[in-house]
Length: 80
Image 1 (cartoon, rainbow, N blue to C red):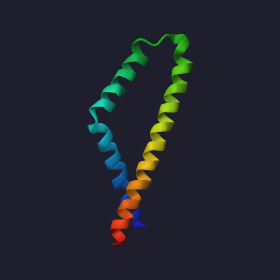
Image 2 (image 1 turned 90 degrees about the vertical axis):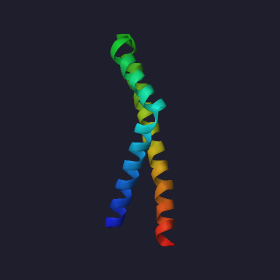
Image 3 (image 1 turned 60 degrees about the horizontal axis):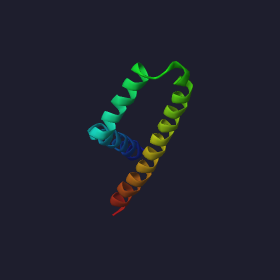
Image 4 (image 1 turned 30 degrees about the vertical axis):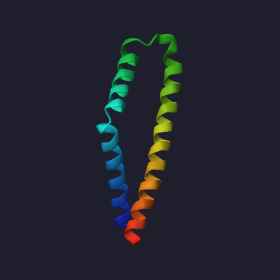
């Protein structure tokens, strides 16, 4: 079980590092937060909340797929 925990932690850290090193992602995240805080009309806040939830769900989906593929590759390497 420890090896599975190690794999999960390794995948999580690698995914976090990949996102944090991606300037396009971090720039887009900063612009989104700036827009929400400074420019979003109050009547659009519900719509924006819904869109942010959709984006969050898409990110989790991408992370899960990434984890499955990465985990499968690590497992194959361990079994060799």
